[in-house]
Length: 187
Image (cartoon, rainbow, N blue to C red):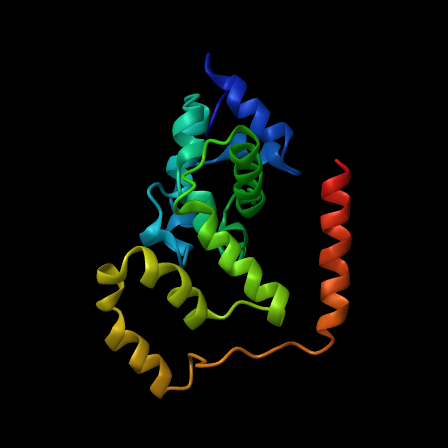
């Protein structure tokens, strides 16, 4: 379990800025979060690795990590965590701190998040092919070529959409998102 040490000030800052963040102190370092993450292979540190770095006070390394930016907010890690740590919410906290302190890799980190958010704002959901095209193929094209056969298999089984589908009542979602942006701007 993570216990605050002499470098615990960063840990306490992250905990205080995250709803339910106290649960981070109970992390068992089991690895379920990283093993559950669909973006795990692209992260420079697993979530549990990031949590150990937070506890060790490695502020700059954590905030410069691409890990929070590759989080797709699927909450699978949170659901599977045996200690019910709000991992996705912690990733949002780390992104907010990194943006505030300008400690993220501006060439890559926000692109993933901005692409994902762009699809959600336009269609009400993510669009995997578009996300891969916008981000992966423009940042690491050779790394993703090996997934071609996998993608074709998913297409043949109708598990991967070629075009995005818009949710019903997208205007209601946009109103909610706009209200959230207004509240964020007021902070």
